[in-house]
Image (cartoon, rainbow, N blue to C red):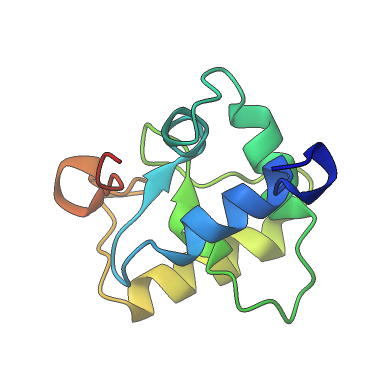
Length: 109
């Protein structure tokens, strides 16, 4: 495959995030690791933040691995994220999602 025809990192992130089942969540670092780019959690966060408001990519299913929501700079987005997760049946314990219950990992290739 020619380098210009390979999917870029963001596109790969979006493909993986689209595969997260409703009612499940994954950590930023776990997305990066599943893509073979361990240590790129921040870049996954940038990819999520770059999505337009009307996106169909379920960005709200990507959270911190400790189960907390990312609130940097946009508290309204956190409220939207929590509301969407709760609508999918994700329960919170205080401000955390119990990752043992709702965490998801993609199948290994």
